[in-house]
Image: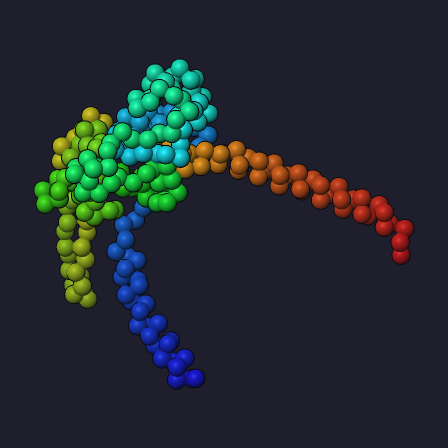
Length: 248
């Protein structure tokens, strides 16, 4: 038994360097500016999603009518955000045919209704800012977060063309070669880097809202309930002391 335990410990110790190397190889994710109480950002994000994402991706769990919870009127939703249907109660479904999607991209674009919950807003925010030109890729674009992704960079006119710059440097003490990967804009787009980050941030903010439209109110009610329980505890404690004050 002792030999088996020792063997397992040695095996686990041998795996630690590999695990550390795999962890360090992952791309560091940037913090997404998610604020579900910022209605202006959510409205802008909804417009960006409809204009750029809904052409290929669906959001079948989200209905156009829920956009009115963002402070929009039914007329504003119909006039500015509905292009595939006339009914405000319909789900946000792409009109792209499955066979056409496979022909264009090789795969069917995933449904994005729960994309922010599946990937996380930070992942999406970093991903949408991580595209760079790659002539070897099928679409001409590659991504630092999702290598060899089938999706082209649909927002390139706003961000511009990025290039992946890879440099290697040897440590004179250890002889280890350290590789540095950096994205650099070689041809600017219509937005500055700060404006593009805000643009993508609004889109990711809306996708986070779309993943759970009731998240903001749920958290608010959670705070209210905790406050009520705190007040009730004090009242119950005072009542208990009053009932038992004469009991020795």
